[in-house]
Length: 290
Image (tube, rainbow, N blue to C red; front, top):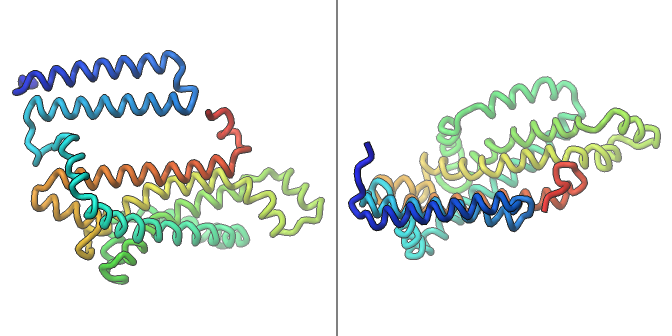
């Protein structure tokens, strides 16, 4: 049985706000707001606010200690009071480790995919090996990379590179094979060489597959950069800060780092998805999006 709240005003107020926001969300959905981009954003915002209100009311109503679950208002106050620290950790982990590893790993995967496409031997030999490497746990890769590249951001970039390489590679190879045989025959009829066919037909046809891999890699890059810092890092970085804050029971700082990481990951994914819409506007998956 759930115990009665210590502060009933907060608990009942949060419950009432939850019901009101939930009703607003249902009303927006029934009104067809989900058919447009602003409507979808409003529905998501209403649901997010409802979760935060219920979270705040539950923590304050049952007076849950901060070392177990801090309230959203406490997390927001921690973010406001630690902006320079959070910014330094963000640059160290996301910009230096995450983005650099993402750029190197994805670029290498695209080049390797073209080379594999030219060689049936590599197609049969490298792709199964890639699936094996992609299944390796990050807790096994990260200590090795720290040993090889040191405690700086370079080892985190190496972990990210290893994590994003094979998802992008596999998706790109599949995309290069997506062009229809009739389309390839037509290019040969026009005396197009391999490079012309690649640039004018096969790479454009592969773009939906490529961006699928790039979007998967955004999440892997963020996770890899943060988790890699648990195995060795200078005195800054999001993973380093989370591990030290947990050790000192500073849970508001842990949740502040999580909030920053979630916002960065969402923005990163959104940027890649926006570029995808501009590049693959012709694809059926992009039609009808408001």
